[in-house]
Image 1: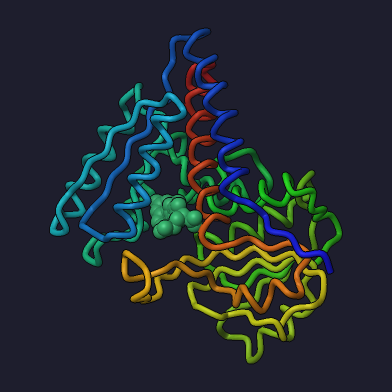
Image 2 (image 1 turned 120 degrees about the vertical axis):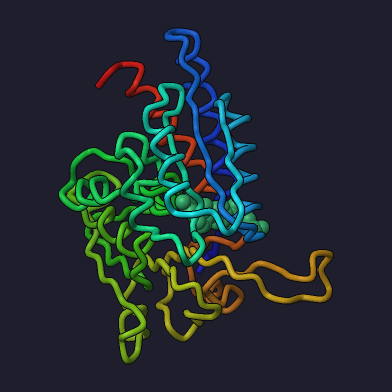
Length: 296
Ligand code: L34
C-alpha cells in the first residue's frame, strides 16, 4: 500500500495565504480590517503557545488582534464583563476565550455569553444547533480543519464509513455532525465510538476514514485498522523526552509508526490537524468581518 502523509502545515499555509489575499481585498474595497480578540486566563503553557501562534497568524493575515491575559484567580464576572465589551465593539469580529478555563469559571456560561455572530470557535449552542440541522454557521475550527484536509487531499467521503473515536464537544461530536450532513465534502456514514465501548477495535477496523480524538496516547494501534485506511490523528500529547531541547516531544493519539504501515494516508503530529485549527480560525474571522461589512 503506497503510504502518504497529509501535510497539514502545508495546507494550513495555503489557507492562510488565501485569507490574507481576501482580507487585503476587504480592506481595499470596504476599509474593514478583520479583528479578533483573545482571552487567556492563567498560565497554562500549552494555551500560551497556542494563543501566540494564533496572534502570529492574525498578523500574517492582516488582521487586527488584541489579547487580554488575565491572572488565574480572575472572577467569572470579570470574564463575562470583558466579553460584553467585545460583543458591542464594532472593530471586533471574533472573540476567542482559550480553553480550558480555571475550575472556578463555568465554561458553558462563558461560551454562551459570546455573541453567536462573533463566535469564531463555533462553540455557542446557537452555532452547535445550526450545525446539527445543516444551517450555515461558524464551524468549530478543529473539525472544520479536518474536513478541509480531507477535501484538499482528494479523499472522497460520500458513502464512506467514517469512524470517530472520542465524543468531545470540541472535536468528536462536531466532526461527526459535519461529515454526516448531506453536502459536498460530507455525506459519510458515521460511527462514533468512545470510552464506554467494551472494544473500540470492533468499530475502528470497519473505518474507511478513521478520526481519533481521545487525548490518549496509543488509542489506536496497527492491529485495530484495516489496510488502506485514511487516518486523521487529532491528539496533541506531550511526552517526556530527555533527548530533546525542550525535554518533551509531541505525539498524537495514534501509534503512528505502526498504523502508517497500513494506512493509505495519515496525518502526522505535529504538523497535521494542529496548524489547520489555526488556519480555520483565520477563515472564520474573515467570514465574520465580511458579514459585518455587508450587513447580513
Ligand atoms: N477556545 N480553546 C478554544 N479554541 C480552540 O480552538 C482551542 N484549541 C484546543 C485547545 N483550546 C482551545 C486549540 O486552539 C487545541 N488547540 C490547538 C491549536 C493549535 C495547535 C494545537 C492545538 C497547534 O498549533 N499544534 C501544532 C504544534 C503543537 C505544539 O508544538 O505544541 C501542531 O503541529 O500540531
